[in-house]
Image 1: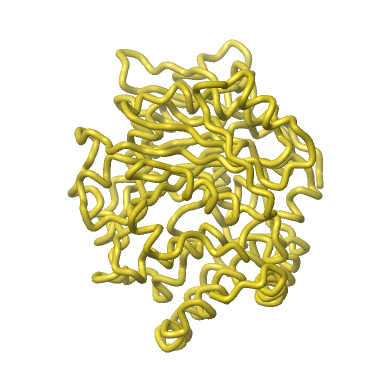
Image 2 (image 1 turned 180 degrees about the vertical axis):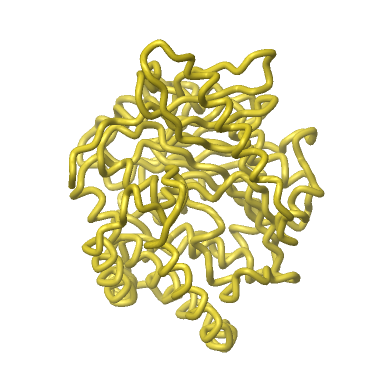
Length: 421
């Protein structure tokens, strides 16, 4: 990859008398040059901008002008799903009791950073559970039972795989809401409250996902990933209702990648357990390479529950840093996509006719989205289609290879576990 200067990551608060710029959690003070900033209005995430300032300039003022334009451009007519989501704000609702599950494997440094942010949550009634997945050392055990004794529960799961670890967390959890995040995030202090409150406001809600932004943009791999979408799903709330399929997603509910990501998701405990939890033959750490979160989204939706995306529930994610990391991620995305689809059809074969009926329009939509990726764009991290950071053809090829591997990997993982479901 070509060498590229790091981009500072910051937060821009427009709710005060004058714009205020501060570094993102865990980030260094913004330096002259490019700055990626989360724009907050009255404390709530509202947009993201990429701007530049030079030595001697006021970075807050420079970025505030860009933010004002971005917010003005965002006042476009909403889709039905966005309108429905905005009609039912849950910010004033007391959130139900929640359990936060963090699956980890041999990363005590990043885990400690994540736990510190999770212990600072403003949610009034929650527990933290760390699941140590197939550990090779005692590092995670020693950290949780030492520095975090009495504040974080430790669970060991020897079967490798993210889904198996999540299922172990589900079995140990006592909350009405089960929230999941990764060991490489820093959670906003309001993250858990914003993620859990919608369940109290909507009894038919089965899942809530939230906003994931980059904690650092220090390497070319991190910048490239975020420039092509990263993990972010935008700043507009959205409600996915199986009784009212969204017109802009012809493969719904099989377009699970648009609903959110496993680093920032929560389920109503009863809905997730009735759906059978996570498929243990999916996820990082198995031959399937991923798809555990996507499988769970579809399982809950096809059971008749609604899914809400809320940008108010924010975590900052530490993207992988190297080109090799990005190659592994691209392959894993492709494999996870087809692995989760295979898992869905294996465990819910009655859904096959619905998937086949949606394929023609869905494939046409996918082709249009693929073409858009290589088109022109604003060059803002978090948006697809930028010519500033073109997506390498080699990564697209890896994604396609991963898609071919996914079904085989899932079946191998299933057989290796002696799965009968």
